[in-house]
Image (tube, rainbow, N blue to C red; front, side):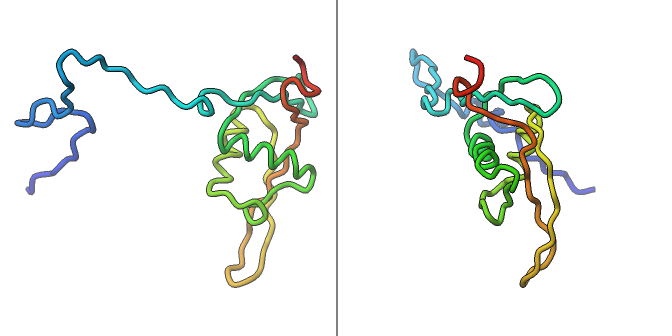
Length: 134
């Protein structure tokens, strides 16, 4: 039976190579601080049609997707009208926070006929401190 080659785990010392990640003697190991724009997100108040209002904090592309859904209103957003690499992932992340978003499947024609998703926000979402609780 042939020998199975395995990729070593990143950061794990390999036989005969010792510690490949050496540092200078006496040098403190301090991790770099993330940029301020990555440190925190933006808070929103989500008021579903049924249930209590709650607060969420989102950042990055999830925040962008939530803002696009807010702007689109009842019309909703599609990856065709609002290009982004991973719309389904952003919607998945927002749903995990409790935001109610419907997915409507719409047919389209053209060179590559099929269906695409339209995402519609089904809750009132306001930035924290702007019409929401303070």
